[in-house]
Image (cartoon, rainbow, N blue to C red):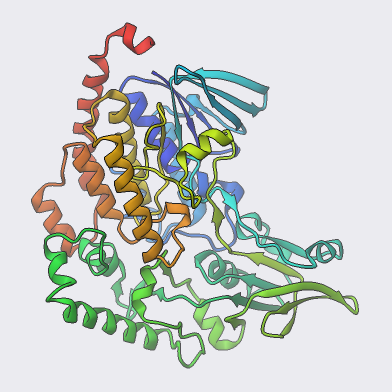
Amino acid sequence: MRIAIVGAGFAGLTTARTLTETGHDVTVYEKAPDVGGVWSRTRLYPGVSTQNGKDTYHLSDFPMPSSYPEWPSGQQVQAYLESFARSFGLMPMIRLNTEVTAARQDAAGRWRVTATGPEGETIEGYDWLVICNGIFSAPAVPEIAGAEAFRAAGGILCHSSEFLDRDMARGKHLVVVGYGKSSCDVAAALAPIAAQTTVVARELIWKMPKRLGGVLNYKYLFLTRMGEGLFPWIDLRGFERFLHGPGRPVRNAMLGAVQALITAQLKLKRRGVLPKGSFERIARSTVSLVTDDFFEQVGTGRIGIARDARIDRLAVEDGARVAWLTDGRRIPADVVICGTGWRQEVPFLDAATQARIMDGRGNFRLFRCILPTGVPNLAFNGYNSSFFSPLSAEIGGLWVAALIAGDLKLPSEAEQRAATDRRLAWMEARTEGKHARGTNIIPFSMHQIDELLADLRMPVPAMQRFMEWQLPVRPGAYAPIARALKRRIGRAVSDVPVAAAAE
């Protein structure tokens, strides 16, 4: 098959490798000037780093360099991905600085992909289209009254991924909107050089220290199957039935103990930043690690927190740029950086196709977060926020390759749609509407990987699963599974008659 992939992040690169190694002709379109996706050098804001340690955040047979620190910087992750692409001969098939502007499907199911790059506009035909542009590809900046006049007066208003020059905050009054990881990363990195830093947070969320009590790495709590099991999956099985049944008091006591420890360790009450609700809400939509030095700077007053508030309007008053908050406060504001999330979108698909892959509420209706049921020759990968993004993308790429090879035995389309709609309703309720248009599976990363491997008829060995209940998941343990699947998928591809493949 001739296959087009949109996006050269973790999902796009590992999918390209798998499809190439199983016998296909692959072209990857990437609008940035480098590989990396969310880790592209064009998006690395000050202070950006991984939330996982390097031992859990890598592709199964390609560990991160031993020279990297435990939590690699964004620049190091981009270098890792570029090294991966070069090591497996992917660079010649990647068209950098090339944006897909349209993808249209003909009556036979083939795709015509229009792209604009260094050589102008191109239009090419493909048998399959795999969308790997990611759920963090389009920055979401809220509309704020007075923004135009604010910018005209020299103010800066942008998304965190667009603020790349640290010195632009030097000596300025900095306002950071949001309380997620990117907001806290930016605030902590820029507060030492800014004249004043204020974080405006509509809602404070619970954050997980990298080391509980300054000693225990958080991966032993959250990056294990036990950690996932503390939160109720849509279908409880095995020991999870105990945790959320007769053993629920034990489970509640465990989470309560962690909440008390974090509250004391971060001095949340004393600093006036204790979130509302219980620690269990940390897994509502995403899990945010504590940014180094953030709470220390809150404690010293270097970073101020305007909690339970939003920016009502920006203004220029008496020659000074200011932000008025919804609680009535007026604060100086020269630079406003919004860590306000992302839009999940595929603007290059026509309206009719988008309607087929969405439900009536604007959610991506994807079976297993990959397959738009009933739309031929189209798949997604990376449309599932995960603790183990590289491993999840790798298994997703194998699932896509098996799908194309006809190696999957899936439920009927009606059953796929029913399962997908049930999942979407559950996700929306569980996250209180913060399910990123149906693409959020955190904290159930391994549950989703298990589903894909079950479809692939390659379940995780019992002993490995047992160990992962107690210890952090090791992506390297999945390398034998990936190799075996590639051999099987490759044989399935080679068994397809040439004439059939051409059709």
